[in-house]
Length: 255
Image 1 (cartoon, rainbow, N blue to C red):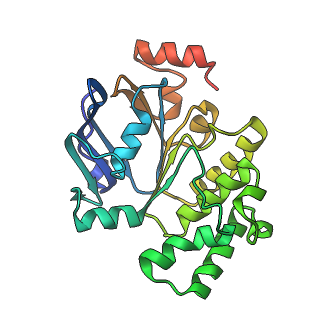
Image 2: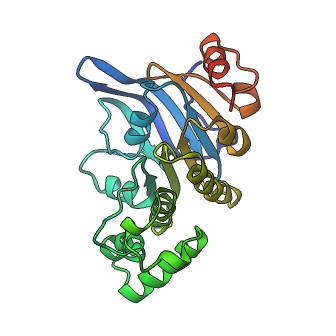
């Protein structure tokens, strides 16, 4: 499949990878990959373990610096140690596999921390916004608790509230349910589905095929650091054109 470098009807990409390559020693994790993320859409990235999905996500917000190619945010190329990088990180939220909440802070303090430190939001205003967001993800009653008193699903929902606190232009999810059992996975996916209905721009690396089919506007299937196939869920998941894609979804049972 040729690289995607132009958006349909001239619509601007919120995030874009242009020929991005990332190597770790002799291993090429992402191989000259191009991908554009449209505003208001949910893009689900699927593929086998080791296919480069998480590395691509980390390149999009420069947690990993690409070895070649270019990342653009709202049309502007991003460079390491550049003021545009600070803008990218302030405007692109990240939800990790592990929750990465500060254990010594209460839940609302975790959510309020970035607005206070990065944007100088006063404590009272930041707390008020944090409480709103915790209610949004079903954790109003856990605001004063410490992370250790929350289940894994509750911690991940708190992490989503933390990402929302900066009013991001895009949300990146890196296998957000991989550390959770099925019951807790459901409560996190329910929050993500709700965010999708709000028109949030989301890029979700996931093994949850059913979620991708139900929520994503576009599914991207990766293998060996490259995009093998991309398109609407009904096409990529249920009627793939590439043999590698067909083998993957046949083995997964298609969610």
